[in-house]
Each structure stands twice: as structure tokens, then as C-alpha cells.
Amino acid sequence: MSYASPEDSSAQLAGEKNVPTRAGRRSGVSPWLKVGVPVAIIAVILAAVLGGVLGSRAAKNNSNKAVGASDGSSSDGTTKSSRGSATGSSSGAVATALAAPGAGNVTIVPLKAWEWGTDKAIGMCLGELEVAKIRGSCADGVFGPLSSSSQWMDEDWFISVAGANSWDQWDFTQNLGDKAAAALDDHYSSWVTEADIEVMFQHGVNQLRIPTGFWSWIPTVAGEPYVNAGEVAYLEKAMAWCHARGMYVLIDLHGLPGSQNGEESSGHNTTSPAWFGNTVNQGRSDAMVLAVLDFVAKSPYRSVVAGLEVINEPRPYTPAQYTELSDYYSRSYTAIQASAWPITMFIHGAFIANQFTYWLPFVSARVTNPPSLVFEDHPYPGNFPIQNNTADILSQVCTAANKYLGFPVPIVITEWSVYTGVKTAAFETSFYASQLTTWAWNGGSHYWSFKLIPSSIQLSIGLDYSQYSWITLVNNATGTIPTLASANLPNATTPDNANAFLSSLTGNCGVAPANTAPYNTGAVSAWLPEASALSSAATVTLKATGTAGSRVRRRFQS
Image (cartoon, rainbow, N blue to C red; front, side, top):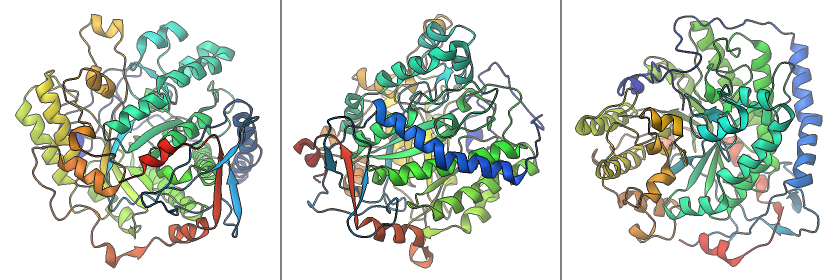
């Protein structure tokens, strides 16, 4: 999520994102630096990442971030294969997480592969977990405002730690210097805990969207103050917690080298973003994608990864920049198909007017069964600007959902909330149910965000952002957020149970039309890279450190 002025059709339903930021709003051609780079430089970056960089990261994870794993089994008690092995090795191969001293290894039973053509995401954004956010915009993070920081989600903490002039993760790490890594580690360890994951599970959540910044995956360069505070280890910890409950994860690349939009959500609030027009930073982004794919393929919890969002809310301004984004999407898609563990790629429309028409040729060339490509949107009805007409706000949900019909790939709403000018529990309850059920006409959705802590500064000027905070709505105990118990279900992690949970809610847009995406899956090509990986995965034993427990097995009962 970011505060700027989207130009896409769905955002126009609710007006523009018009909250001022330090950088201010931008229009016209961006003054982004255009830099050429020899192919040899990109090759060096790629080699560094896939060689020593990943090795050093793994060593860091081994030293003090070993993952505690739990065993799990499928609902019928049998092992279910998931996407392919890291090595494509023969029978008896083992993929093992780095062991903590004295910890034993347990076998990790893979979850079934998430299929976006049939499974419905009842998801949650873990904003501020790995990309920290402060003033003006939101970014997703694994354990709190730190993957791409911007202070508005926990402003009092942000200012108390890094000073009043810290607006984003760039400022945060620059101001703290060699103290930044420890401060971030403390934040990550408490912003989202396993107890929080359990609360989400008990309220029907079956998937987490976890944002990360590029500095967690590849080396920084001179002039970049970011630090790697062990975010990847926290990501794998969250994956382990999800695995124990049959939940899934969408990895979100929220901050790219140079900043893809100049907003806090990218990690750097700046009037001179340097991703578009900069082939060096685009090459580094390619390396980042490869690093993520390598991590996923080697993780014993890889089966929980339901997709990879290769860029969050990019903002191209010229036809040439649109082409650069399309080329990046093409390279990322090709890299994913060639990886040891192909996962579904998510693309954002980039606030292009008539985005579904513009991106139709790109997605049509990549339609597979099951879907290897998903389109995402951030509509925020009733917001940007803030609105108070309840009937009109609810109608915006239906209008947006109908715009998503007829598209050849699934559409997932990876950010939405109940934040409007209407602050009554009755409307929050109706609005929540309407969006959750209607976004599930397609691939489902992810609420923005799990947690937000209103600051004393915000409240003093009449700004209460607490409707963005899902856990606040839960703790208000007004019944806004439904529970598994209210639907008489043990979980919402199986397709049948997710559908039953959604069916227990009352929306205002009616039943799902027959022409929701994707269409006519029998007439499109099979997703062969995934099928090959599934075959290889059947012969691989996955190991992780920790102790298996019977509680985990019960989570998988339908």
C-alpha cells in the first residue's frame, strides 16, 4: 500500500490516494536517472548473489536463526507432493534446513500445491514485518515495519528509535548506522509472533502476504544505507508457523533497488527514484528474483509458498518505462519457469489506465492450467479520498469485482481494508464480509494489514488509522471479524473449508458470476515446469530442525 495518486480504473472508483508524503505527488515524466551498464556487470551481480552471497546468508541463518519446525500430515494421513525439489535429485535425496546446535531433524510433509484456479485466498498482509514503514505509506513486512519501512504504521516507535526525521527504512538505517540491525531484529521478533499466526488461523486466514526488501536478498552498493537484519530467517520462521497450520505464503518483493515508485513502501521516499531507466538496478532486481527462487527451492517449507510478487506498485510514467516493466515481468517469468521450484508469479497493473486492456496480451501468452500467472489489484473502495456514503461504498465493491470478470488469469486483491470515513462496528462488519466474499469471486484477497499502532501525533490531529489494523478489529470484539467457530469449521485451509467459511458470510454483491477467472482451463496448456517439479519432489525427503507434535497433525484434518 502506498499513498500516491493511482491512475488505474479500479482506484478511480474510490478516488486518488492523496495523503501527502515528504516527496510529494509526482506527475508527468519522472526525472529518473538513466544509466547504461555493460552486460558483464550484471553477470558479476548474478554470480555474486548465487554464489557467496547466498552462502553467507545461510551461514548467518545457521548461527542464530535456526527455524523450529513442526511435522504435519495431510487430511487423509498420506504424504502429498508439492512443487519440485531444489536439486531435482533421485530417490532418497534430502533437503535439510540448517540445524541449530543440539537440535534434531524432523521430516516435513509437504502441503499440496496451491492452485489459484480453484483455491481461494483468505489472506493477511504482514505490514511492517520486513519492510518498515513510517509516515505516509505502508509496506508489507514479515515481522513489522521493517522490510520497507515507513513510520505511519508504528510512528511512535519509529521516531523514538530513529528520530523525527526518519520517514522510511532508508532514513531508519542511515540514522542508526551500526545500531540499525539490532533495532530491526528486536522489532521483527515481536511485531508478529506465532500466537498472532494462531489468532489469524482461528479467524479463517489461510495465507500470508509477506513483503521483503531487496537488501534482504542481494548485496547493497555504495550509498545504500540498508542493512540485512536476518529478514530471510524470519521469513522462513513464518513459513514454518504457516506449515504447522496448513497455511500458505505469498512472498512480496516490496522494495526494489533504486525504488520502483519513490514511496516509503519501497524503502525510500524520494523524488528521484532510480529503477526505471536504470539498467543496473533492473539487473540487480533480476538477481534478487533468482536469489528468492534459490531460497524457496532449498527451504524445507517450500510447499507453503503460493506465489511470488516480483514488484509492488511500480510507477512507470512513459511508454518506454511501461516497456521496461513488461520486460522485467518477462524475464522474471522465464526465470521462474526455469527454476527448481516454479511458483506462480504475481504482476501489478502499475496504475496504467485501462490496465486490463493494456496487460491482456502479456497475460494471454502465459495462460496455463494450473495458473502460473496471477494479476493483482489494490482497489480500496471508500478510501482515497475518505468517503462516508455507506451505500455508495458498498456498491464500489461490486463495481470493482465486475471489472475483474472475463480476464484470462486469476485476479487477487492483495491489499484492501475497511478504512473509510464510517467508523461504526455495524458498517465495518458488513463492509468486511462484502469485500472478503466478493474478492473471492476470483482468487481471493489479503487484508491490509495485520497490525497498525496509531501514534500520539496522528491522534492529536484527528487521524485514526486503526481500521487498517485487523487485530484491532478482532480485539474490539464487535463480531466484525468472523471466526472458524462461528462457521463450525476446524480450518479454512482446504478448498472445501475455505468455500464453506466464505459461504457463511453475507455480502452485498450476490453470488459469483459464471465468468470469473480463470476460464476454460481444459483448453489451455498444462503448466509443464510445475508438473516436472512435482514429479521430482515426490522422491525428495524434506528435513528441518525442531520437534514434531500431534497438535500440528490435527491442523490438517478436514
